[in-house]
Image (tube, rainbow, N blue to C red):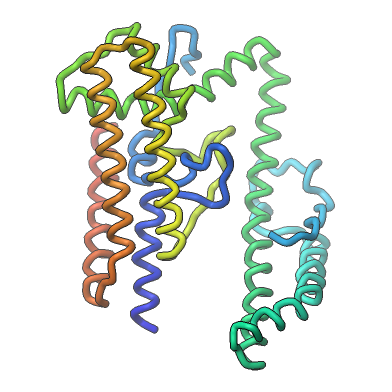
Length: 317
C-alpha cells in the first residue's frame, strides 16, 4: 500500500509538471504540456504592430442560479447553495439506481464476488460525488469569465472589444515564439528580423504547435489536472503524436513560405528537443521502479521545480 501511494504521488508530480489533459477537443495538445514552461512564461508581449499593449448519458441538472448570479468576491464559489446540493445528491442517488443492475452484471462477468461488487459500485458513487464537487468551482470560473467578457465588451465598445480579443487570442503563439526565439539565440545565434518574426507568429497561430498552456486568463481552457501512471502514459502518448504532427505541419508551412533554411533548421531542432523531453518523461512513467527509486525521483523533481521557479522569479526582478 505504501509503495502504491508513493507511485501515485510520483506520477502526480510528473503529471502536474507536464500540465496535460482532461478530456480534450481540437486543442487537446495545449491541454497537457510542461507546467514548468507555463510558469516560466507568464508575460507574453504584443504579437504584431497593431496589437494592444495592454460522463453519464443523463443530462446534468441545471443550477438554480448558475447563469444569473455574479459573485465577484468568489466567497461561495467552492460549494453550491443548499438547494443545488440537494439536487446534486438526488442526481447521484438516481444515477446509482439506474446503473445498479448494469454494473452488477459487468463486475460479475469480471469474476468479482458480491462483496467486491458492492464496494466498487460504492466507488462509482464516490466518483460521481467528487465529479460534482469539482465541477461546481469550475462552473463558477466559467460564469466569472463570461461576466468579465460581457462587462468589458459593454464598456469598451465593439471595435475596441474586437482588438482586445485579437490580443488575447495571440498570446499562445507569442508565448511559443518567445521560447523558439530563446532556443534560436542559444543554439545558433540567429536573430529573427521583424518580417520573419511576423511570419513565424502567423504560422504558429495557424499550426497551433504549442508546448505550453495557461489556465488563468479570461479565454484560456479550464483547468484540467490529472494524476496517476495510466493517465500520464495515455496523455503523453497523445501529446507526442500531436506535437509531432503539428510541428511537422509548421515546419512544412515555413518551407512553403520560403523562410530561411537556418530558421527552418532551428525550428526542427527546437521541436525535436521538445518531443525528446516528452518521450523521456514517458519512458520514466513506463519503466518499473522500486520504492526507494520513487522516493529519490520525487525529491529530485521537487527540488528541480523549486529551483526553476526561483530562477524565473529572480530573472523577473
